[in-house]
Image (cartoon, rainbow, N blue to C red):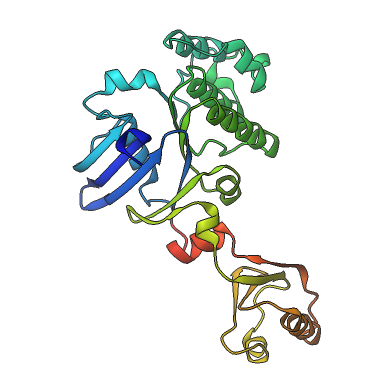
Length: 307
């Protein structure tokens, strides 16, 4: 792709806070019209990267171009073309929800109808309610409405479904698909692997301020099949490994959830179920398939908890 075909181009981006490099030589490209998802542990550099692309922070070194412009120096020209959903709502706490959305719409050349968005996002009943009195989910939906109402060319979303119930998450996903179909480019961060798998044209996994993996979900999860099953957590797997063909490994990626890595055939499945029966365990949720995005994420970034 040529430069004009990328809505966001980042080369060698570095941003330090004291002695800590929040972003450390990051390269990133977001194709025009795509939905790109940034994944990474807490502190991986996702939010800092997005804030620099939005023009709210400036890099120490590196080149950042958003819709062909420098987001720091050209903020006044660029901002009307962007839709931005922050982790905090960005709305004045004393303003009423409907007033806040109409104010944002008034700044756009061809906005959506604010009342339509309020109704679609289940906010019509609280349109006259001050933002400070909204629930967490309502604030989240208002923030999304504020990002969408101006029909932006490029939409930045920082954890757009955090705190939403399942119905709210599916509604947001439908809106993002509709926005992409309408020509918007979308860059979002999330901690939900199913969200990335459902939505992303491209996934970029960040760790320690660098891109450690990138590609489509299919590209990232390509590889040999595995057998997954559930049983009592913390089982001693050594005897199962000995019973399986050489080169086959067994892991417990989450408590009580097991994965057998190696060529999967009827004999391997029979061996695993027989071992479970001998151990007095009922193997449930047996599935055969390629590893999921969560497996790739954990293999790439490690399994230690980040705070």
